[in-house]
Length: 248
Length: 267
Image 1: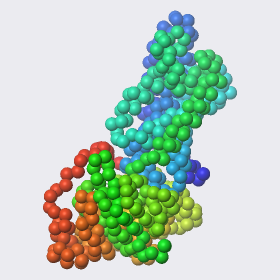
Image 2 (image 1 turned 45 degrees about the horizontal axis):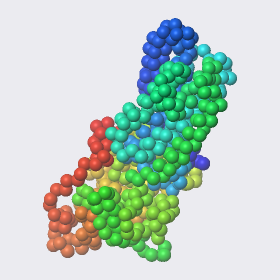
Image 3 (image 1 turned 135 degrees about the vertical axis):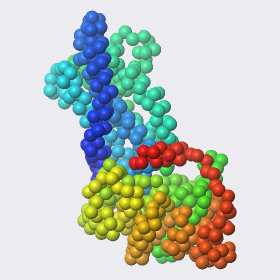
Image 4 (image 1 turned 45 degrees about the vertical axis):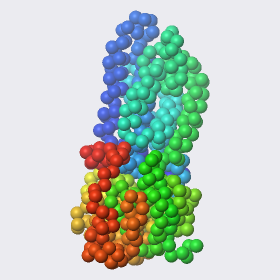
């Protein structure tokens, strides 16, 4: 247990020390929130859907968590060759403990980033239904973070070089985000898009957060949580398996 | 078995990557407590052999033994017995020197008190004690190497692998580093397994030398024996006689590409 803890703590320490990175990573979500949140607001309202800012804020929080969690795992590739990862791979501890320490650390950092951007949405005018809702929503956000940190570990363990990184960003992370219903409602989508949104785990994550924070869920919070838990277990197993196979 | 004076036994070791045979039927022993130099041109198979001995790569065929144990089957037990300094850095540059050392101690289940005491002794020995609370990213190349070596000794390993530990260091740093390593080699009886491209260094520190080329061992013996065998007057001359003077062009791998990027970013 001490191994998992110290590796988790390491991720946290590194995060808290990298102030510049924290600020830089807020750029993209801020743009989505500011430009889309206010830019599409009037159209959204005219369509009779209410406040777009209220609608998109949970999506932007979800995006921050997705990007941060995915990045933590993919940074592993670098870490394996030039960093600390190799040191942990030759240590006399089960690989699964190292994987869990790293993944939980990455997930925790993603939740902290989510918390930060949640603060920003409040300043921008986002109003969740209650304080209790915020606490519950962050339990779901923690699940989202774990799902994608584990997925990233599985991918980071399987990639051979940095070229693969671009592939993952363009063909996995961006689609996960655009197909998640973070930016648009899931009702009345064309059939193909409807199917794609339904196989994206982030869709359920954002739907759950939205359901709790503003009271409108497409699938229902219970189903959202069930899907996240199921996918989470699957990805953690996949991550642990791929991680155990790493050769340097 | 553990009374055997050979701490490492390698027999008919083979490792292939696709169609390339990096290590081709290699057999050698390393004696307990000695300093053993593994020399060879670029791409000869040195690092691949070290990776297999240190459990991060599986052999294609052949047998390996470290302190009587099989690195493939008893990887956890084997990992307790060695320390390693890889060719590429493996420190966390966002953490302090002390934190790097301390995490290592936890990973190797070194009790807290021992971690503190031995950590202090080693950092003082490698002249890093005053900088223990500084982030590693502020360290010079030589300091980082010293820290990695100190860390490798923390859990009192029986074998310490050093893969080109002095690459890029000035003669002063190299000299000082070897003094400390040889000291610990003598006082703690730790076996040192090293690779290097500096022949003078191998000549000075190694008890025995094996020369590998094209994945095969071409000679083994003390520096004097190798010189005598080839009729050369220096180890460098002996090395060139054994391995030829052609320059080896390694294929540029994904690893090299990353190394190039790393050089630009100077992490």
